Image (tube, rainbow, N blue to C red):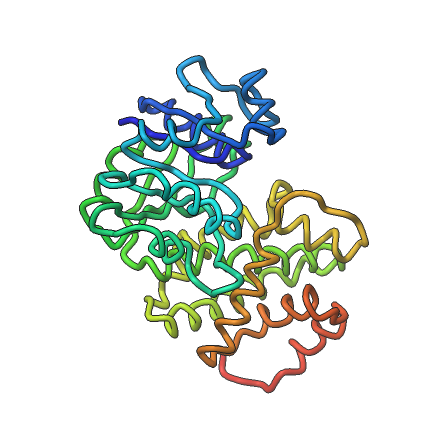
Length: 320
């Protein structure tokens, strides 16, 4: 299968490496002036892995789109709309789009598949999402994990799972695109909360964060028309280890840096996702106490200690 991977950051480069490893014809495409692209082009290496000679590297977006049967996209979720303004200049008919980012568009509250839907006809260009746990640092060392591919197009979903499955990544077929996307995006917000607890020295509270965070995200998924049980699957709860505990988690590191007064320069998708989820909670009247606290700290200047106290002084209620 001819696959073009658009985006050559940490996860995009890992996807290209993985898909080549299991036998596909892979091209990786990035912005010509971006440091991560220049590094891959010049050395075929980055901080995580090394590309074999079989992976083609090009900055030519038109060529990358035209050659591909499947277009895998791994960029910052908040730039997806502007990116598609460029991609949609080229014919996408008969191609499959696979989104490997985790986020919700902050300006509109739209899921990423819905953003793509503003530019494409799903009957001609089906869209799928690839979500779930795992770090490039583990995959390149041969440590396996499980992930999910979901799509409203059942035939496409089944084909992708069959083509992408291996001993390194066991794929499951998702059955709830809304839940898969919202759950995957929301785990980054919970990751920031976990980092805040680490920064405060309250790591023992992360068990409660996991339990209550999953509950509130399940309420949001249900309000949006999805299956609330998706929050307890690989897209959300299954990704908690990689996001709430891993030393490599950008969102956890961001939260910890926030408490300690440090500067964190890498992408933490949970920041803008907290804004998007807060807006959805307001729109659909869903109680999202953890998301709301993170939003208030990041966007309204609320003090972390007062927000933590507010979570503990909420009205007592049944657990379920």
